[in-house]
Image 1 (cartoon, one colour):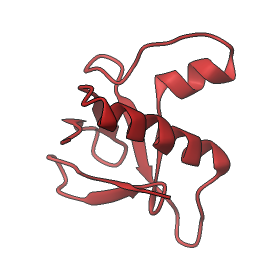
Image 2: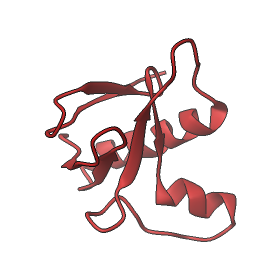
Image 3: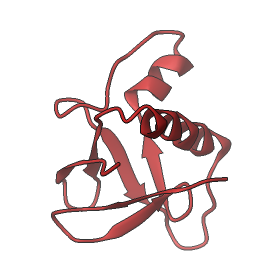
Image 4: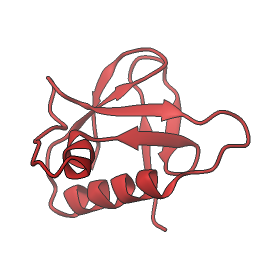
Length: 93
């Protein structure tokens, strides 16, 4: 599976989504409830959090990474929030 690496401008940590960090998007949450939600903006950024030691990505996180890969291909402007420090960052693609 392809991965997306992001670096937080606040704490300077780099996360590999779906590898050593989870990502949750409003789009994915909406899909779980059968609704269309537009997120990934500054007001409702994607949520990125590092995995605990030894944890592997769930199929849900893998679906979220696939959504982001499609957004990356479309060069869509999206934002994410770093769970540890709370900084909102723009995806650099």
